[in-house]
Length: 462
Image (cartoon, rainbow, N blue to C red; front, side, top):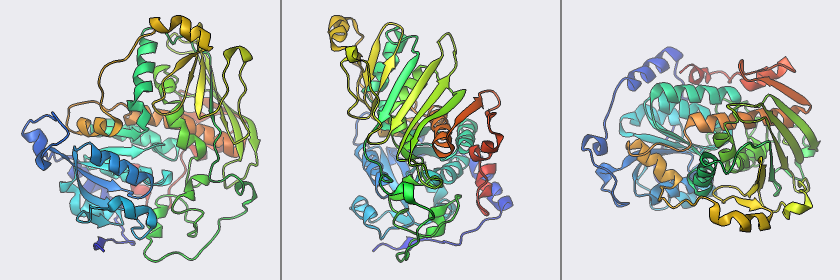
């Protein structure tokens, strides 16, 4: 097995940390593909024209994204970072990349290899997106971070700010935002097919990992930790709880301290185009209409959360209602001829009703008879486009602009951060869009931007 560089007790005083980050940010190291002025004409670029990519989180979802990056032919993998290389979730994705240098601590990786890295893929659990992404941007590295962008409202705010100040290319990993639905929704709003939307119903009713056991949890479980897991690094800036298979490698999404539930997992694939092209921004009111099996530690078994967005930029106020839970399925008027089966949404505009799925799924008009009547008049999208991974790597090369930069993906994630608070605490939350504070229960403001644990504060000051 390839030797792994690691330092689980890594520490860096803030003065040294900020000095290193500021120094690195002031240096412009041009990769050969920029220095030579060569553009990407095909997918078989020589190594000198590819983006040098480091991957933080190489198992499960991270491995799939790694594969997508690899398939573009636009990158060289120069470093891997993961806390658990011995886990089965990592094995298949490393495959023929045994020569890539490995680390367990992303801070050590940047200390040793910053000059060799052009861009970073961050595909760790939700709670650990923030620190790695912030350090990468502070060092002038382009960053692709999986959805949801970050675990808290305040983390998203800092990531949006540093992305703007650093000038690097950024992309949140909601892959459908480079697919057919993105271009269709953009075109249909620009041409007035989708206009004056007043209501959206979104739903994700598949089984989730916490269903069946989450409502009965009274404390974090504890198990014997397998050898060689860097658990302190896995916990990152979040509270430290004992190792458990109910946390790692996949169950972390179930817990408020580490995951973002169905909102963070599916919201960015279902409501992304609605949020961007309807310019929804932040809601003024978030209401827990229904919660089944609420638990202070784990997401509820079912939830219905309603977001109230005000009128803005000539568009009317809009209510977005989210349903999750296997039996918590929204019902629709019979005349629409529509039943919620797969994750998706129904959009009510002034003149038309639209139905759409998740990711790249195209919109259609309801009922079917209405769609058949107007289908020949609807704008068609024919232009060629890059996929989400290629879009990011081409943006690193200065050839495209990312479609889900942190300014877009971060704002969307903040809506879900607010929704999670309603799932967790129930009731009705009022939010001031100008001050970005909760006014209904000021104690909840602490959950918008909770303090990190000791030794991780420096990432919040970059």
